[in-house]
Length: 98
Image (cartoon, rainbow, N blue to C red; front, side):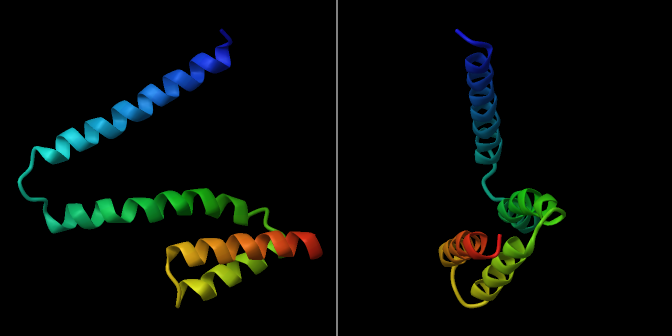
């Protein structure tokens, strides 16, 4: 088997162990402090920011247009509406703007 296959398997195992380990640690507590819960609730937004922010350094007009549309939809719509509107805006803008 190829090296790439084993790297994928090792990454999957490491990801699983990390997730199950966190679940096992948190499940041992009867109640979670509100600050800890707030921090855990902020993790998805922090991860998304780390994926989007570096791309803005190299963003062109299409990406900035999609960002504006996504920000506008986020004020009224939910997370899925925001995601779909941003993706659609990016696809359309890349077709016509470049």
